Image (cartoon, rainbow, N blue to C red):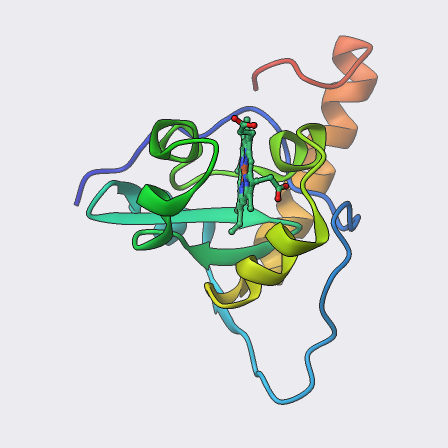
Length: 128
Ligand code: HEM
């Protein structure tokens, strides 16, 4: 199966959007590799705050346009989502599309990688 490019940004255990507590929903854990295969208009998954959303149906309803969402297909859109200062309404709409979370082991792996980058490269954001 086709896999998309993974962005260099590492996943963190930090909540930028801070929206849900799981009460009745037991989130399924997806690996980064699996998430990366859902990067097309036929199946468009995006990670926000380490949670995984399926925006395939929503993409054509997004007030900011479908293509901007497609740019984040299979990847992490947290910072972009936050940067555009989305409303409470947007955060409410999102809940409907939640399908799971990123596997914990993948988070730890990226955390240690970003730590190494910081030490070697002197800053975050460099490709590994
Ligand atoms: C993942 C990265 C995302 C980016 C880069 C992005 C970008 C944008 C931009 C540029 C606008 C402004 C459109 C305009 O004023 O012409 C917008 C508006 C909006 N977006 Fe997104 N968006 C993202 C994800 C989402 C998601 C996941 C949702 C909800 C499921 C969402 C819901 C909305 C809504 C409801 C608006 C209207 C303004 C508001 O209520 O905040 N967006 N978005």
